[in-house]
Image 1: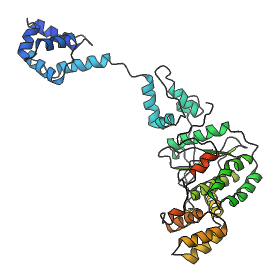
Image 2 (image 1 turned 180 degrees about the vertical axis):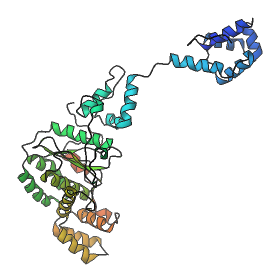
Image 3 (image 1 turned 90 degrees about the horizontal axis):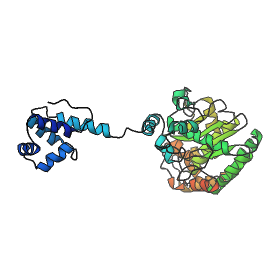
Image 4 (image 1 turned 135 degrees about the vertical axis):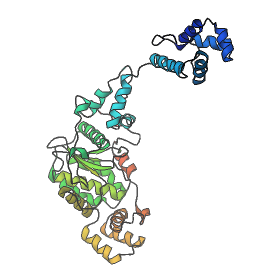
Length: 373
């Protein structure tokens, strides 16, 4: 076989082999049983060499069957445009963070070959100079280990979106006493779903930034308590479960974190929040107890439960809920947890996401809150 210069079209190698044997193209066409135009196209490079072509040429020239096919692949790879740095950046970042979802949500602008600074945009989202400096935070819900490895990348991205939006909000100076008074007064809003529409304003008056961001797939986040500084608490919620009992429970849970000063050193991300207290850190136990008693006072719930167990009729729940002035969905939520029967009286639950989204700007479900980056 004749030596072949790197990255020449393999048709050049075919022409060399024809010439070395004293043939012309029509001779090779005769040997292979092909039209002369086919050989002409192979030699000129107008036709790429297929696997079948490579085998036939190998038989004619007495070379390995993959010889010409390898030349074609080598040539094609050389001619192909090298992947842009954007592709490499996407791959590197997507391995660690939910980049595709963040771009889809409008949190990060997509990079282009003409503007390939994707790493810089991701770093800016997380408030650092370069991707390697992206911090990790600990979280507490249903956890006793506060190691950095606890935080999932999807949770970290969601948390920073909450923080990013909170920084844009203007509220009065935080008052712990005002928040305690508001938390108590909020019980007067529990009877009807429409009471939820007052929450953003009530929290803002106390100096608490309330942010709603749709959770990222796989994040399992219900809420977060974080502080921008020692006087700027933030409550973030995902509305992952669109139910009235979950909304009030998670909200009161996060309010308790704020009242107790939790999250000052490291944001507390709460996942899979429920009234459970088993195996949880002290601050989570306190937050769960406050949320449980807020939704349905423990003494009244215990009395109702023991009187009616094991049969809880729709009428019983409606009468009890009306007597303690809460929406029946809150009673049902407590019963479902105690009994482990999450289909019990499900029709008494109501969805509240539409009420929330009509009461304040939210980030997600097709909407994006514009922020400075």
